[in-house]
Image (cartoon, one colour):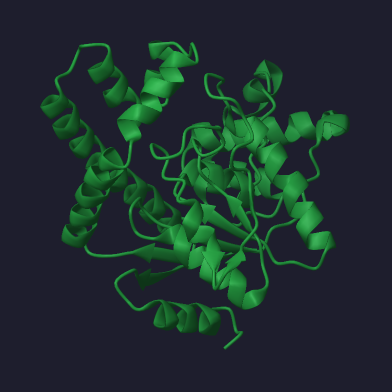
Length: 301
């Protein structure tokens, strides 16, 4: 699988669509808010980005839930693997594209999301073990691809507890297919990213983003539900219910999106520290150069 990731406002979707067109692939979205219908401008659903040379590139896990509901990572993981298996069975190499680091990691690290209870007996048995000894015990359950499960005694103990629970409850095993990802990151320098974010915000407001939120409120979606989705929906809703002036809304929203992009990059840097090899491409490069670089990385040049 190819993973195209990066912070907001860097052109990930357009790049992923062009790459999909070049290798006859399809895209699976990794965006926690684009799953909702009618939430378009605020979530950055640029449908035109999926059209390359007149061809519509298929994209999955967009517009699959009604606004006002609360989609979660457990649902996303299961929805993803249904699509993934279908594409693999058709001989298609999927492109996972998005900026929600948690969603991406839930797939490539195959998070086990069933609530595993505390095993007091097992914890007492392992209480005198060193971190190295716990790491060795954990390695008997699974191959340790990185050290995130064993960087502290508490994490190592919990990891063993989870693996022991699954061993004794085989019917709960999710049996996800093994994922072999190649990561391509789309980013740019901090100042260019900040400029892109601000310009894009004003463009989306001019194109009707406030009217989009008004429409959702008119569909009897409560202000609290819209505020839950954060960023654009939070601040525009606060403006529409009279808690923020237009100028305050724009200023606070712009700052919040910049902070969000910074958090995204922090997450991706964390992934790199945990042995994830991300091949970064500057979004300012021409599309043909970005594609040539990506195809070389994929060994398809």
